[in-house]
Structures are given as C-alpha cells and as structure tokens.
Image (cartoon, rainbow, N blue to C red; front, top):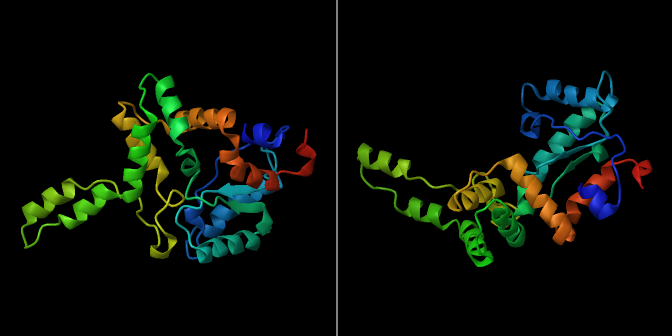
Length: 228
C-alpha cells in the first residue's frame, strides 16, 4: 500500500510477513542464533514460503551499538547487513501520530474529536506530565500501605526504556500507548492492526509524504524488477 502510493511500485508476489521481535536477537541472548537461523531460512526461500528479500524492524529504544550487534548476528548466518533495516523512529505507530489522521479516523469510527483536542493530548504525552507528577508524589516514610496506593495510581510512562541521551520527542515516545490513550478517551478500544491500517490509508490519501521515510526504506529492500 505504501510502496504503491508513494513510490509507484508493486510487490508483484512479494509477501510481507511478521517475524520474531529483534529484541530476541541481541548478542548475548541464548536463542539469538536459533532465531536468526529461522530468519535465514526465510531468506533462502526453502519450503512453501517465498524467499525473504529483507527485514525491516522497529527501532524501539536500541542504541547504535545494539543495532550493530544485531547486524553482526545476521551477518553471522549469511544475511547481508544491507538486507536489514531499522525504522528511524521507535515504532511504526510513531509515524501515525498525525493530528489530521487521528481526527479523521475517530470521526469515521463514530467518535469525533477536534484537532485541537488531539493536538493537546499528544503534547501532554510528550510532556509526560502525568508520570512526572506521579514520581514527585512518591510517599515518604516506610508506610507500605501508602506505597501500594501510590503504585496503584501509576500512569503510563510514555518514554520508558528511552536512553537518557536519546531525547524525548515524537520519534522516541511510545506511540502505540499514546494512540491507545487517545482512542480510550474518545470511548474506543485501540485495535492496533485495524486502526493502524485506517490511519495509514488516510495518510496515503491526504499526506503521503508523511510516510515517505518508510517507503524509501522498503524501496531499498525490494529488488529493482518490482518497478511498475
């Protein structure tokens, strides 16, 4: 969908499938080589599946050093490093934190919200204010009851696991949590797969350049013969 709309390219029989989370592929993970081996077999196309031509993963909160370890692990099983890509942002949902797209999808789902309200919600998430206030409110003393009550009130930390030097931005925020809270405040359950498709379709129709970075990464992984 993204390739066809932005780059004018088609998959022409190339399948897009889910693979193991690359979190399992860190250098010291006991199952790293086994899991990468599964990916390697996908790339060879043995069996009923077509050959994998590349892998595109969420960046999550990985440092460049961790990414380099992953690339070396892939290289160790014969997968070239140029066949493995990582999003520049934390996850795909970070590209979907688009005020216009969210407003349009909420309206389509029968729960309209103003763009100004959605923008405010995103800004509040970026400030992480609820979590900051919760941390400040930590009870003193040794009262276990007070501590338990405090822990029960723990709000989302939208920047959990983000390295201190990475910055707290739209690129590093846990966007799936933000979308989940925006949908919840509108009276909806956030269905990650279905709602991501709706948001993506709106962006491709109304603001395709917003997804160009992903399209370019996918284009680098696809063979040249998939041009229309």
